[in-house]
Image: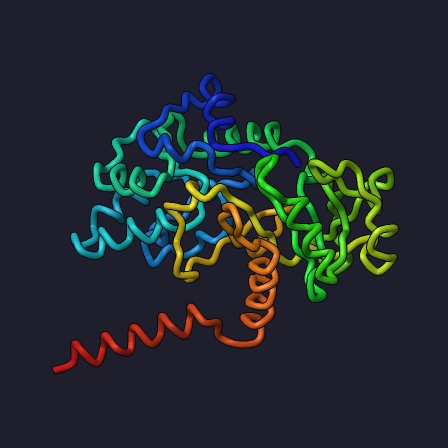
Length: 313
């Protein structure tokens, strides 16, 4: 699976789609992982329903008309909610005029807004065809797959960000390597995404300064497993790219692999920051959230209850 960005769609779709940037140019590096496109309709502004799928949102007359019907206060909140969700970009179809407050909010949150003269089924078919060409066959992805506390964790991020170094630290802490650099993808009988290492690279990983390492020889046979489900995706980001991220933990992000939406956590990387322990905590948090309400949810509920108490006469 290729790693493509909104900028790749913009370049590839200038002729076929007539795409142009209306706002949010600073977010053109946002990742695209799915060829599916969403047209949410009026439900778009109802607390961002249906926006957890990391897919491009196409806005037409219905979506813009329903936005215009909202009172000023609710409109501002709705725009804020939508642009905080982890969507690659917004596309305004049919050459429609985009409201200035939508353009402004999208720019503030680095969400690209693209305009196109195409509309309806023609736009959707052309865009999906182009995305399939850009993404290629979804058979592998670049990253490092680990087994952490019985959870499959896929580390992704730009080259040189420190994925292999983090993986090596985690192996030293007792976790296991599944695949380094290239992760082969497939679906098991239950529809879960499974990752494994190509046979040629099995048991090996590359670490800058150390070269190619045989993990099983250095750490023992239990330090390597042949395959595992991918249950969590962790994206390592440069510290300055984290400035626009939601830091409360309330935003639920997803990463699409083989058209399955997996939980996504973004971790900023900086000098002397122990990324391995942060990944472990992310895994424990995921395990906890699957069985009970997590800390951000409880904290949010307490704030809402406190606000209700203050507002009551």
